[in-house]
Image (tube, rainbow, N blue to C red; front, side):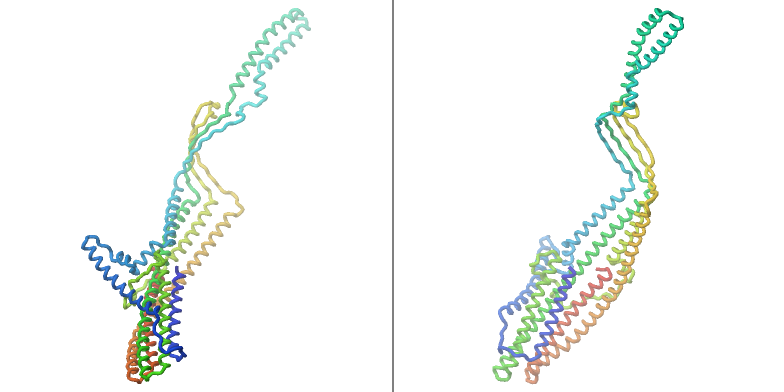
Length: 561
């Protein structure tokens, strides 16, 4: 937007330069093709267009007043601005309102502010406990066993192993008794038969007991179910949570300052585009007035040439001047069209809209010049650019705290409630059983090869860079304020001088016209007087617009726009 405004300002300067060059060339004698050149149809159309526009503006004002009066009588009164807008008559205030309402970049900044607000709300939740729930099911190809394979085999043959060992020892004892002659072979055989009849049932019973014990130790954990809730309350996170919330708070301020900056940028562009159009419109009227003076002079010279009291060269000079004036009018009209397109784009209006600005009919545009200015400190606080850079410095400081917090001890309180099946706390019972827990978790970084030190150092360097940029912008703003104050003072001086010159130019033109009628002044003298009059009128318009734009620039420099 600013680029467009600068572009049209440059265009205005180019128009003024071309116009001044053309006026100066009129004074010089140039060869011409013909004596009498009448205004073309297109030129007449341009003149009539200006007359129509001027009359339309007056009619629109009258219609607006009448319509408002009628609405008041009918009890449906509308604001003057709304009615004027329907007539395509826009004030500077209304242009500003439309631009602020329709600017896309400003709308994006407002959405960014909403994001920053939600981010801040999210950061506040870091102080609150975290509650997480979980549930799961798992099927295992093998169940969890409390016994190894050797222990399982031992229990399955518990009776055979135990009774077999006992029977073997008894058999050895009976054999020794027989060898020593204490018992006979028949008695030994009978005892062996009796022992065999006893050990077999005992062995079988022992095996059954062992198998029962082995089955009783099965876990049956192929299908496992678990569900639980865990609560974690941060106690000390190294200051990271507070730093994160401070950054979120600064982020909200940053977003609001960005909105203010975008608003000032939009308003500055609108004001400059508005006053550019007003300037071109007034110069267009002046150009038509100047052309009319030349046309009147052309008619007089033509009559004098027919009477033999003027030369052909005199007529050719006036004809060239008339053509040049018509060309200037056309160029100014083109500039007005381009400037209106730029203003329509800023205001979010159709580019082909034929706007009529309220100040086009204002005679005195100098306006009120403030004499009181804010001090430097107040200006710094009012400038959104300074506040944004200060936000950047504060964010880098808080970012350093966050990095430091990563390498400090962290302490958190935990609590949980869990239900599971099978129940590991009751012999893997096939029932859902619950259990709760409370504890503290301490995380202490021990060694990170200096990573934390280097990151903190880099973060502090970033803060220094942001602070240096802030100081640099402060100095530039101080210079900008002084320059805009001088510009405004100079514009007012030029305006006062232009009004004084206008008095002399009007008197000079009156004397030249009178002398020409009496035959003591030449056509060249009259044309020079007309050019001086035109230059004086143009200087007044330029000075008035410069005062207005300088006021806008000063308000922007002071942060008051």
